[in-house]
Image (tube, rainbow, N blue to C red; front, side, top):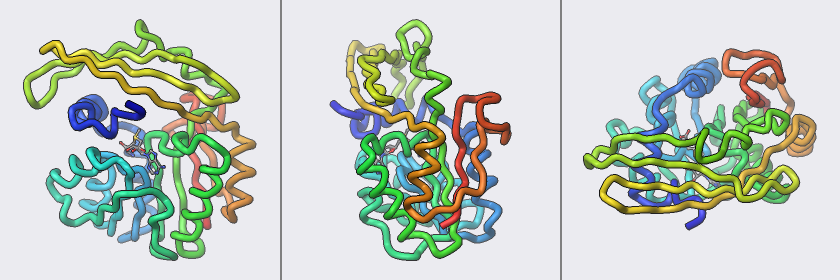
Length: 244
Ligand SMILES: C[S@@+](CC[C@H](N)C(=O)[O-])C[C@H]1O[C@@H](n2cnc3c(N)ncnc32)[C@H](O)[C@@H]1O
C-alpha cells in the first residue's frame, strides 16, 4: 500500500511508537509560540503529536490530514476535543483563518510534483491572514540523506502498546530528478509482515525560494539545522519561516 505508514491502523501505532517528541517539535513550537494564542494550522498533522501540544500551550489549533487512520489515532488522544480535525488536504482550508501554518516531519516533501506543491502553497497563502507565518522542514538534497535509507542503517525496533515488537527497515527503490521512491518493510513479533511504498521530493534551496516567492510569501529565514544553524552547516535540513 502507498504510504501505508499513515493509512493502516497497525502501522499508525508503529509511527507513534517510533516518533515521539523531538528537537524538531521544539523548533516548530518555538516558532509558533512567537505568536501568542495563535490560530494555528497543522497541515499533515498525522497522529497529532504537535497539534495537541500546541493546543495545550494555548493556541487554537486545526489539524488537517488526508490519512483517516492517523486522524483517528489523533482524535483518541487526551486533549483531542480542543483541536479541530479535518480529513483532507490544503484545498479544504478556509480563507484567511490562521495566524500560523506548520508542516512538520517533512510533510512538504509529500507534495511531489511542482503542480502539487504550487497548489499547496497557494492554498496556504489563502488560508493565512496577511502577515501570517508559514514554517516547515524539507531535507536538503545535497546531504543525500537517502543514502542511509538501507536495511543496515535504517533498521529500527520498537515495542507496541498491544505487546508486540516490530522491526522496520527502509530500502530506496529509485532516485529520479530529486524524487526518492522507497519501500518500508515491517516485521511483527507475531509473524505479521506489512510493507509501504512512497515517494518524497527533495527540493533545492533555490526551488523552495522561487516557489514561495511565486506564491506570494516573503522568506524570513531558512535555517540548516534544528538549533538554527546556517544552511549546509549541520542537519541537512531546510527549516523555512516565511510570511504571507
Ligand atoms: C511524516 S508524517 C508527519 C506527521 C506529523 N506532521 C508529525 O510531525 O508527526 C507526514 C504526514 O503528511 C500527510 N500527508 C501526505 N500527503 C498530504 C497532503 N497532500 N496534504 C496534507 N497532508 C499530507 C500524511 O498523511 C502524514 O500524516
